[in-house]
Amino acid sequence: MSSDRQRQDLQDTFVEHRERLREAAKRIVGTRDLAEDVLQASYLRITETSAHVVVQQPLSYCYQVVRHLAIDHCRRRSLEAQFFVSEPEGQAVSAPSFSPEASAMGGQFLARIGETLERLPARTRQAFILYRLDGLTQRDIAERLGVSATLVNFMIKDAVDALKECRDGVET
Image (tube, rainbow, N blue to C red; front, side, top):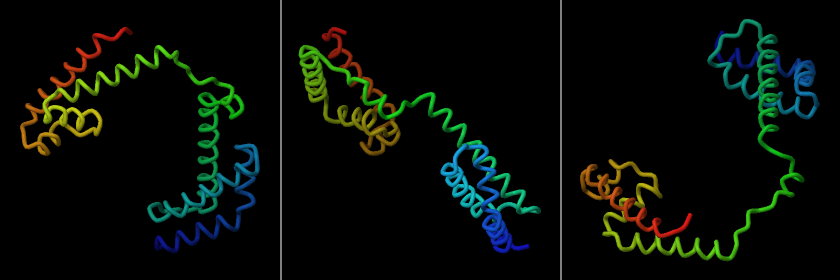
């Protein structure tokens, strides 16, 4: 059987037994709305994978896909419940506030970092920014600047050392 014909058979089977498939999903996820979400995801999964899989029993395959996606949905909901709170609970969480002194010290520290970076040689500063802020590899930076990767490594180390000295004057 051609993959197009098999895909059409699976789609027809899914549509024909949609109500029963939704009830199977509802028994797992609990509500009709969530079951509808699972059915939609299942239909997409069936149409995507049917070209790659030989299916002997289309209805059983549809049930299997619905069941697996419903279980995955429940697992994901359970995991999210462990890490996330409801919106009203989240609104009650206060934002961290800093004293005026802490804010001023932070501003001074950022200014000191900027000044320290400005005092570095232009190529060293550029290598550091490309590495730390832009996320380029040392090899990519070396190609961009026309220098060796070893030199880039030393330039980044020089910048980090200068910033460590900048940090030493700040209370933690």
